[in-house]
Length: 115
Image (cartoon, rainbow, N blue to C red; front, side):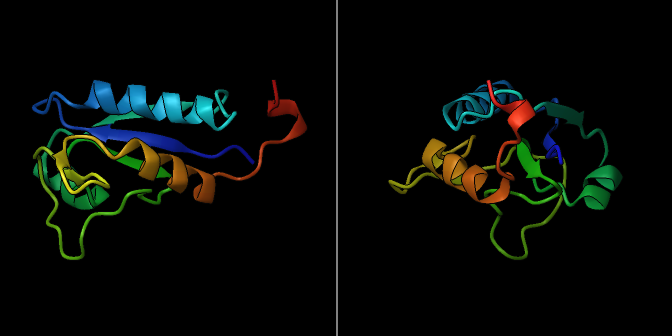
């Protein structure tokens, strides 16, 4: 089964290209460069609410946020902040947190998907 990996973004926030690069680097590092990433632009507060979009960028693996926001985080067209392992805030997830989450959420590769 092919996982659905999605990057949701709002065009008013400039960090989604860096998040996409980090996501693709993490997939490659985990030996999963064949996993496709779908980019989805969120364009309205209604769409943000419907999608549970708490800010740009938001990543999903089969509908699950690999680096979930704190409970009660409101949805909306805004820039998202992540907390790095060293305590700093960042507009993108900590690469180590992202890799750990992808290891947990991605199914093992099939023979066909191996390079």
